[in-house]
Length: 150
Image (cartoon, rainbow, N blue to C red; front, side, top):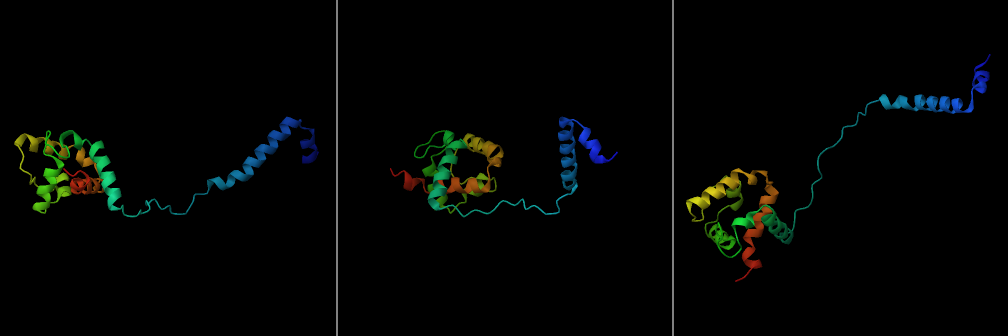
């Protein structure tokens, strides 16, 4: 008895099942091969943000990262106003990003309780903010006087 005769005597559903299994076995052989290509997991570089984009993003982050809770643009709240802070940083050629990263001492004259609150923020949630985000917040703060004239 030939293979063809055996196959012909099998019921139609069984023939479909046998055909399907043969198809799977034939084409699944390639699945065991591992890809030898090296994947490039590096994120593509994007263009530098424009100054206006940095200010816009910095303004948004200033609010989202709760800086606005303690620092108003023009008046003192829990901490000094942004305008007051940046006036001193501009006069003394200070680096606000270095301060926010905890790499520089405060140069704005504040009370010890204000310094303690800010230090807790630097040691806390500011550690989770990227350098790029800190740079955009600093850009916003640097130009806040232009955006909010008295």
